[in-house]
Length: 360
Length: 91
Image (cartoon, rainbow over all chains, first blue to last red):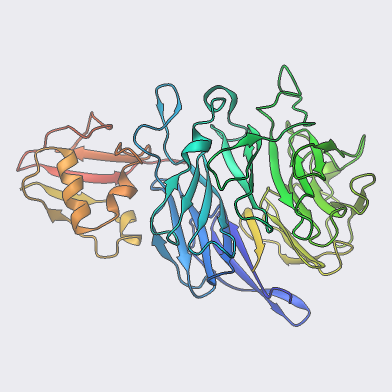
């Protein structure tokens, strides 16, 4: 069954849209003026969760039991007193980048990925949080992880294998992809085949910059990542990655990615001009789709502005639900599609910068 | 007893917050602890994970900005007013 709500995390709070007949309509907002890096639903409990980035008052966590109309602040993660980002730099929670509910067989389990690189886990539905020490203590972290776009490394992707909740993949910018198969007791780098053009050794095992990593729900060994240096795909559960960037084409630099839940060969990205510019390509907004595992890409433009567009779509601001897609941009535009991206309709054109879009 | 005054911005998150007096407070750390007892969670708005003053928060004692933003050891006298303010940022 299709999801009938869409929750947007924006620079100016939460915006909720509802499906009305054949279209979406914005119906209410909440937390006005407070930046919301990420908001999503825990389908096990029906609770909406939002991470908050107060300019002055720090990083907070909030939950809603009425689909985002009202919110209650709850305990946010804190780094332990002895945690150091670098020698002599105490670790403090600088950004709650992504929130991930646990698997169906993990009552009360929640995950949060943060800058400066800590993975926090709650086993009591958010009443308390603990830093995952095995990941924080991997020997390469202190020297090999670093900030990309943010001051320090941050976790933006948390993927739980639907076949085995003890197997989790995370994406860190900048470090790369890590895998645990024992519920977080140990972690291993999974960056074979990746390329980091900004490192002295582009094939270095650590220091890669995935912008987002997504998993095919129906075939969890199929993974895609929009990386700083192109688009990469794995068909063996992140053991190996293959560069599927469109050579001399649009599907190259970007932040967001989505993969079809049933067809691991079909994926979408929203391209941008590479890192030193960060604008829509040629002033025209488009979404690129592949239906053959990245062998070829098509640019989908119907309904999207084709001149004077400066939109960038951040890493959590593209989502997919069956044949429906939605994305929000840095210039406050949100577009939806009911036909797998063939055509797009605007949901809002004067919204705040959009950080996350989720069908719920 | 020192009196504590707060930026009005904090009232959005602590609607009952008013100026108040605290007992037995010799340092800024004592003041924040006492305030947090009355308004649980407020310390997390003013201080970071390790108890240091957040970057964009200022605390004044007797009209002067505190010097120890890490352990909050500045002394507080009975006649002092402690002001917890939001630092200006962004113009």
